[in-house]
Image (cartoon, rainbow, N blue to C red; front, side, top):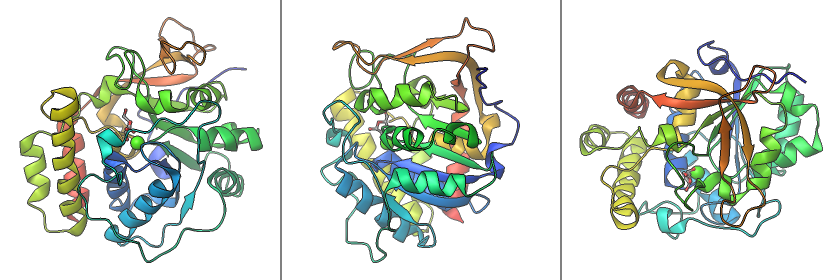
Length: 322
Ligand code: BDR
Ligand code: CA
């Protein structure tokens, strides 16, 4: 079967309905605020998965962010409580015990929508015309892999799957060679890569180019809106964890890159590649093997190589101010 990567500047993705599958998570929360503030997106729903923190907390956190953004019109559906095969691995050292850093947490008013994430993804996509729904994934790909297993027609039905995950030139951030989202469910990631869906991967190679400098944080903190105040709080926490765990300066803005790509694919450069995920090795579990030396018949992915950080922050700042 010929596998088709997504042309990066065809404007196709931003005109489609969007499902955001996430594990909030400090940077997932910022991605949600960016999406909630982008009125041109047709947000079908937010689905949550165990990842950075437990499934119960990621589902609560997505509802909490939705309430701050005043977007209770968007359903939140809870999903997988553990990875497909491997034991769960959380990242609460990067996101805090609640998953939201120092952001004050509360029990949101609006409840979860009924159903389970993988089933709801299948139902919502299959009910719409082919090529009219994009899925953005900012956590382990468990929900999407389950949905693909339940409905084999689903991968070809999607306009695109835009994922924050993987690393090629940057090395890993959870192990020497693996990025967290892929390491946390490598079997799900491999199933999605092998599915034939139109896959765009925004890994550490690009998210490490998009850094929350003091000037960029100050521009957001100066805004009056509740989402902007929350994002400034989340970014301050990210600065602290970057200092503590990475000895770095400005923290990378990982997950919002998915939404930025969907809104403005011209802010990224991508290359077609063959992507496979390591699922066996103890040492390199979740490593993304990215092979550019392939023809169109072998390519299964568009791999992001460059991002315009200044323009991505300008977009985020604009959408938080509206
Ligand atoms: C990814 O890992 C998670 O901890 C973040 O939320 C992001 O999705 C970055 O490697
Ligand atoms: Ca995440």
